[in-house]
Figure 1 (tube, rainbow, N blue to C red):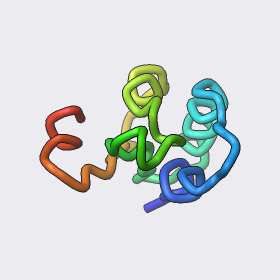
Figure 2: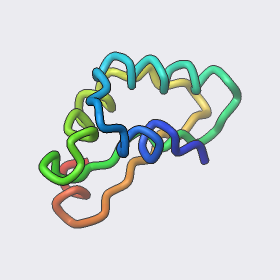
Figure 3: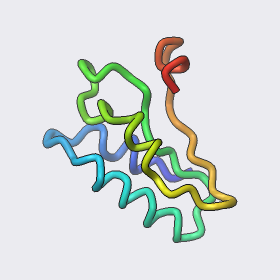
Length: 81
């Protein structure tokens, strides 16, 4: 499971634009990976980098055969996902 788009980016201090995240995930989709953890549905107040999770998930180009799981650490995040 590739977790870079979620785990790798959520700790960055500078907010990465949504389009950059989408491009990263789309490029990873072309590498043969089968699972790309694309986002985390958490409070933007606690993890500002993941504040655009819904936009990222709506904008990625889903490739057949690739799964795009997300992290949902609580019921509110699960319901949002």
